[in-house]
Length: 421
Image (cartoon, rainbow, N blue to C red; front, side):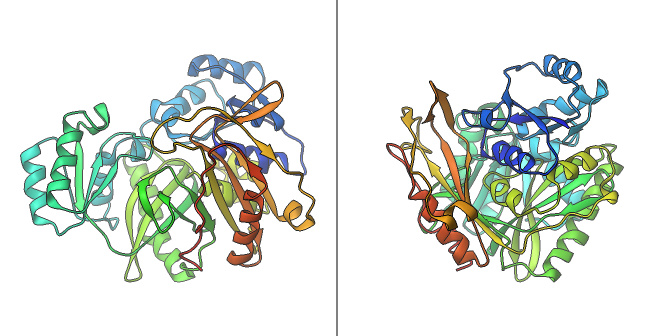
């Protein structure tokens, strides 16, 4: 099958890697890809969605998989489908579940899906008034897409009001903050769950936990994610069942009722409070770095799962998972997440140890290639993934692999998966 993958990060690399490792041979294309995806397939550079659809038709692309949220919110799925192309991801209308936090919160309320008490408004007076009724900490969210950084956890009423003011003025997140949500802070433990959906049916993948903050012990500012592990032992079958019944089924039914059936990845950010799952947010694509640890845990065909979901035929397949655990440790550039960093050459030791060779790999993200040499080009550079029969074993292997990758200013957390250990 000829497959086009949209995106340039570790998420897209890991999807490509999983497909490349299948027994069936596939031809892969990446738009735009990164310095390492060209080892898996062909990088192309076509930014215009209509031109990209024309390329897909011309080159007989049989499946397009959209990695990041921006093209989905922009409506790339509608453009491809209008051309009769098979594409995995939600329509522009359905992508509002991530594109607008206001739309998402109102949808949750309308279909009785458990979520935190909230107000959404562009009135500073209304938002301040509601803020005063909440206990601290207080959650303040910008409405639009902010690259995973549009959520502030304020530790005081004054800090919450400052965040509201800066969002509404456009100072914090530009137009994305012109409407703001203030909601109660939920005290529990957080989970990432992913349902592959075809509009009618779904397949729930294993629950993961990621580590958002830059520093050990969850200190410092939020990032896109510094590491993750799956499956988490904090979830039992009872909790999975509650998520299916209370979140996924009413969401799929609700989106159909809204005239926007949901196809693609439904990423559910969940807070578990006293054993009950409360929905924090929806995203409409895989999390990163969660995708990097979920892909290697799948023992059935990844390409078939995406293709069946994109053609409304999930009922026809059974998705199977390894019994193992996966831990992914993100290696970031020197100044992440504060500012950009200078490119730095990546030096990888030759892997001689059989255990590391067999049970670890690297998913590349912020990398570029010049004259055959790979450079860290900034942000989150790569993810070292370890597999094992226990979380401890997977984690130890991931960190062994980290020790074999070198570039100036490399930054990692040393406590990934501490919640489970």
